Length: 115
Image 1 (cartoon, rainbow, N blue to C red):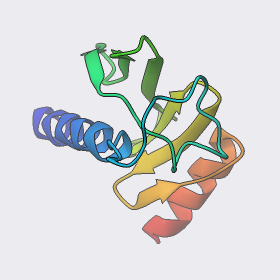
Image 2: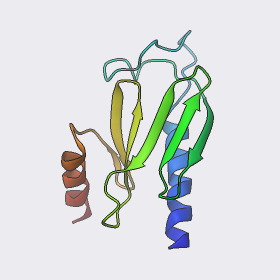
Image 3: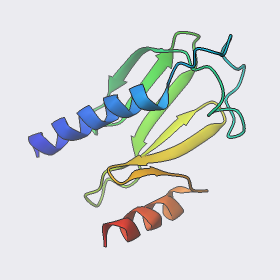
């Protein structure tokens, strides 16, 4: 169990680094991240983040934006977490990034990728 938590903690930190890139051509952080501007906007760096006892993360960026990365379903063993910041959210897994309308849809896609 400890090895799983350590691997997932590493994956979550890597996910934060990869999913909050800094684009050199952009000049300022968007007022509000949306699904339309998230991939093309400048992303400020995480200032701090904490992990709770369940492996969920909550943090704040340098400009004060709150972000979370939480398990979708903790009742079954999985590596699927939802990342949210402002008005955008998507799902991060050991099978890649999943865009879905809700947790059930994301979990369904994730489980289909396992088979």
